[in-house]
Image (cartoon, rainbow, N blue to C red; front, side, top):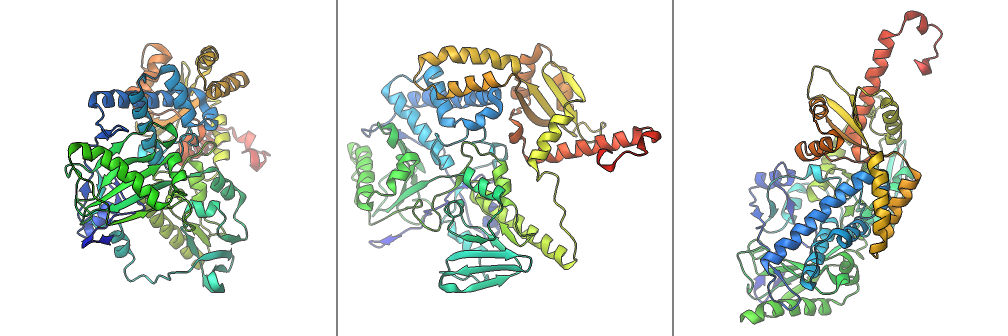
Length: 571
């Protein structure tokens, strides 16, 4: 951005390196000799009238918010698969009304600010996020600091694209793929031909059917495209004549009285230390981000300036007009149609895996943040998915040259693995209380994998009764109605987790019954109990290996006379 002899560089799209431990983009930045600026934790909040929020009240509400998130996690564990049909927003609102310690107007405004921050993190309305799987990628978060890259992330893109032939201003409208290769048709009718193609367009473009695939994509991929959510985050970037805000912080927040507008300019990023000039960015999340799409830019900037002047002018600090301002419209940008993905109600982590699958017998491949189950909605996730597909493309090219087939792993068919899991637990290797375990790997290896199943039948029926009574005392009945319906239909509910053989043996030795075992499992071992679909492809591979081991064991121990005449399908 430039104006009045000032210039600065910031990101209108992805802007934060979320963690530096093992982050490949952080490594690339170091290799290029680029510095990274840690985003400092200090984030003062300001009330709607511009006055500062009491730090003690802020601390109390943040604690309440985090406790409700923890309770939502426990709730979904007891709900099992029905949690897939409930939104995180419905769960949090129900828990707030029944258990939340939020009483005053200021506390409610603060609570809504935290909800807006959560919608920013997920680029989606809480009413659309899956209670069951909204945070399924949490175990894979990169550790370390969150950072800005001085000069903007475009510096990474420019370095990675160096010497690469790139055709700009070509809008793809058709992709044909088959046994002979691929054809990519762009505007004007020009056709690019190749052996293989990699599609990295945002999920929003796929959802909008902006590209015609011939033949049509497999139904399972179309279903996943439909199920996954693709949310929205917008920004107002403003270049000022000078820095009037504090230079000892990188972020500050603003509360609003209208819950429906809680995400409107709720958070400000200061780029003054990294942009090369006095640049300030206001974020718009949640429902406000959708309304922002039709707000005239002059009105948006005026609203932001009103907030800033309400904060700083009582302190005797004059807020000048910006030299230049830019408002994003990612929801209506035809090459994006949104910002980044999230697990919507009815979806799961499996959908990311399905989106990542190649089609056309290794002719058409897919990458991007919406194709990585472990690192969605991140820049490093998009980057890693590109490395993954580079390897896949090489694998298929080599196999095609050698006229051999690429073997697919056992984790691709989740439904088959679900059926296997039920069958394997008919004869568990270990049982104690409501817990059952099946082991994989060598018995002599304490780190070999194991799958734990917990039956929550008795607890559920009691909880359902309590939920029915509480139902009369709050306005949001949806969650409890869904719970009650589920409890009436299903007498047994199972949740699972993947752990080591040693951890399973330790759990068996815990005294005090199932309640103490659950406490030990969650608090001491830090294990998260999930429904069957939450186990992911890592568990699918373990399930397949346990099945194979048991088959081998049965074959070795079966009397020879029973081998005669047994059909292959049963042996």
